[in-house]
Image 1 (cartoon, rainbow, N blue to C red):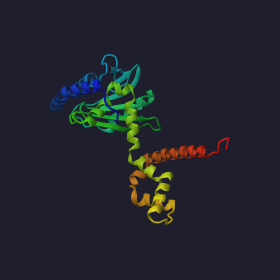
Image 2 (cartoon, rainbow, N blue to C red; image 1 turned 120 degrees about the vertical axis):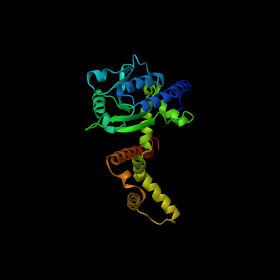
Image 3 (cartoon, rainbow, N blue to C red; image 1 turned 180 degrees about the vertical axis):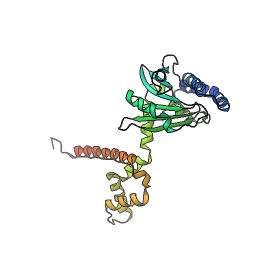
Image 4 (cartoon, rainbow, N blue to C red; image 1 turned 30 degrees about the vertical axis):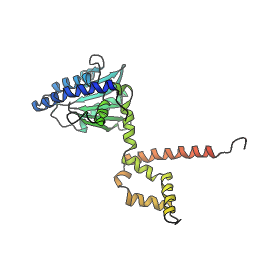
Length: 259
């Protein structure tokens, strides 16, 4: 993850120090959803750096009831925010309408929060519309003595949204997911690499690539990482990468005009 700029880090640190006791107190008093929206709006302004008069809007709840708040940066809808009362547990189905509306508006991000907990979802423009939980934070458990906490919290900042840092973070998470890593292990280049290494350590005993793949699937990798829609998507991603690699190798192997 990228280093948080000093100015942004200082604002977030000061803001979180101020709002952690505010959030704890509001949770003890079990304030209602309307009061939680007020706290969230202040968080967006004082901690995350948005202009609450020009960039934080409630126009979507007034016109359609799809969400409580929306963030617009340079006139473009960046993220929809669904707010629940601070004492309410967050559930994925709380954002269904917001996700559908975001997809219709071409907005890729939806956040669900009760002030303390923040869940950020990436919207997939598929049929049916789907969403993936990308970031999950508890503001009252964060410690700014830990640089990783600061970096994660900074992903919600105005500066990060302007630079598409959440998109970068989502790509990083996808690359490190069990589905992607399993797909890479099962890809043709990786299986052949395993085959070559096995031949080295077994003194050239011949092992078939299909046999290696079978062992990987049945005995090494967990089924949950190799089956289902996410596994299939990761397999397609790895296959495209393998295809590109082969194309590059074929181009490099072609004789030059002067040879």
